[in-house]
Image (cartoon, rainbow, N blue to C red; front, side, top):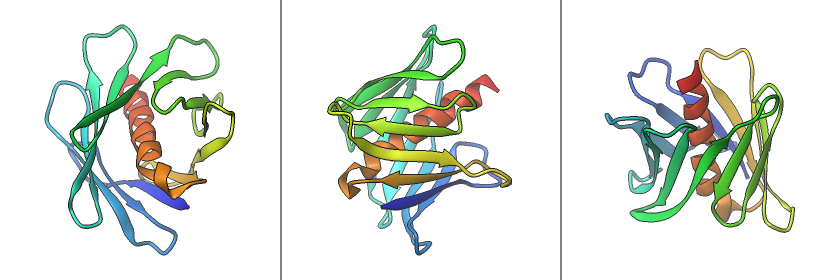
Amino acid sequence: MKMLFKQRLFSWFDSYDIYDESHQVLYTVKGQLSWGHCMKIYDAFGNEVGTVKEKIFRLLPQFEIYEGARYAGCISKEFSLFKPQYNIDYNGWHIDGSFMEWDYTIRDRMGNVVANIYKELFHMTDTYVINVTDESNALGTLMFVLAIDAEKCSRN
């Protein structure tokens, strides 16, 4: 399954639309006013399906992941010099990123690819392509892309 992740052009908060290959909206992400980043994810029918919420007052950024109202795990930035490193507490997943922080691969605990994410350049806003091997992992993958993008935006 391929998803196109696009940030909205004129938005005060983190706002994104996620499309499928036929340009149908799969998810809408709306940023909430809060300390740190807080993003609510809605499905195509307007139902809230997830939340990505930054924990504040931490040395390195950490984001909690909620599926509906249920805490599902977290992603936290690890100290690294050259290549981005993240610790994931979710389904046994592991994430590897490129030096420029534009391309990522998420793998399960067996080393199988869950998703490949890459940033498309030369767009007015952040645009990522998310290739998910199993459609049931689409929401979880999207939440990690949101957390990583929010962490990068906080540094800039």
